[in-house]
Length: 358
Image (cartoon, rainbow, N blue to C red; front, side):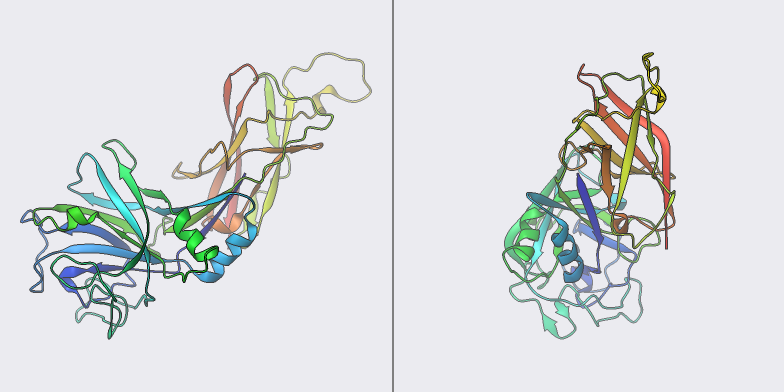
């Protein structure tokens, strides 16, 4: 029931057509192959190819903080949010490689004139330092990596944001003791080496002025379910409220536990000295939570039957949210989905909203 997000600390695009140029401060990361005559890009070099790869790094301190929170089996997903796309095939793949050499982000931008060369570029990991054993087509360079990698396949109607399981790479850093030099995102070599290829993807970088910088999402299941003496909700005539939602949280809030109150909409008459309208019940064990951005309606943390399970103790149902992984100055809505014993699924949206502030 736990999801913890961290934001990238460094990124840049590597351009084979501009092999010494650094783009560490660009708002956009590119993953592309524009070798075809269809490309409208006018190359400013004598390069025989136009391949674009992106490198992204998350700080060791942020990784260590996240890893200190996880328990049991855990996984990580790399998220990149699409800004633009050109000439996509009906199906295509993206590769995520584990970078094997340290690099510097630099302070350049794609349209700089003169160009900046003080950070990672196609030709080197920083100015004056070439990539060791680089992978390239015609222009030497393009980064280097270990044998560990991940892929994501996209279909014609799929969301084109990158959301790929990179657990194996994260485990190399956090469990196996390998150095964290970040991820390299590229098209498959068979596409890059095809002189007729023309495909382009642009993603938001850490310097974006939007709410979509690259993130790494840690997920693990630490849910507990013990209803004690509470009755369990068995029908959809139920009112759910979150009584301990203060409405505003600082973005440095480590974790907050939301408590769900569930009571019958039409309680049975009974002889009692207390109100039957205040009797709390437990949600079924197959209940899940999610977080949605109010303005964009994007699912920031989507329902997941393993990682967003609602827990329960003798006081009722609950779930924790790590606030530091949410963008500040945004409003978020809490959603709950529950599977009743009858097999009926209920989506609950009671307009429970909170804001993250700086």
